[in-house]
Amino acid sequence: MLEITVILLRWLQYAGAVVLMGAPLFWLVNDRREGGLETASARPVLATAAAVTAVAALTALVAQTAMMTGSLAEAVKPEALSFMVGGTALGMALIVRAATAGLGLVAVLMFRPGRGLWSGMVLAGAIVTASFAWTGHGAATEGWGGAVHLAADVVHALAAALWLGALVAMVLLLLRREGRDDWAMHRALHGFAGLGTVTVVLLTLTGIVNSGFLVGLGNIGALGDSPYGRLLIVKLALFVLMLALAAGNRFRLTPELHSVLSQGQATQGIFRRLRRSIVVETLTGVALLAVVAAMGMMAPPSAL
Image 1 (cartoon, rainbow, N blue to C red):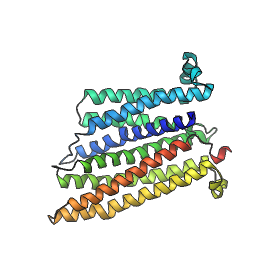
Image 2: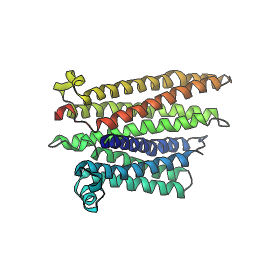
Image 3: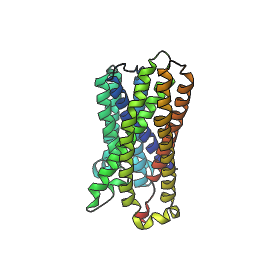
Image 4: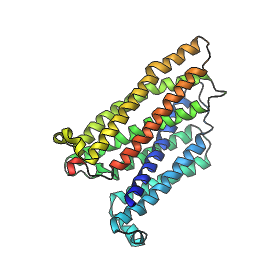
């Protein structure tokens, strides 16, 4: 039961982190363009993400300490928590994550939405996201490859947060389309295409590096023989599905939106299809994060 709780808490932290980094970066990029987009829903979304991340990180600290000490009663003792925070990278990363998310929550409540807040939240989200490298398998590699694996894990997490957080922002954009400039919305959707390509390249390259350390070339043919390997296969399948949906948005639906707008035709139909596609892509990303949370609790093939 405790292990399931830790997995759930990891998933909540992942979900909060991607919103904290990717969504404000999407708003920041589009705020600099002519016809910037209204972001009325930004404050409650970011506040919720920051609060969930902070609370989940602190709760995870207690849960992880309970797994180390063997009981919840021992985990809440000051000496056990002090050792976890001061003596392990995991505990320190959880404290940094909770503190950064807490500061982000204060900033969201104190400052008005705009470039300054977006910039600050992107930085906070990047710190929160990068901290996952110290609470996963990336920090366990020893020897010459430790720094390489850790760096690849950080870049992988940041790229994933950029993609998934931007998807959340686009879903909000499409759900609250009434009264907005359709051309501005087209520019926002089209403008993310180039950045999305960079994230896919980074995710692919760092994913190969991480798999090299965690799976090993000799174990590729036997991925299905371990729980970690089977979940990795599921993760890759979800990633491919997201790629297919993103490609459809970029090469078919977004150009079709441009054509419809240029000809002055009704846009309800194309926006409905875009909204459906991006919602499905986002939900697929949420499922992928759940798989990653579970993988973090399993021994990779290289450790077996």
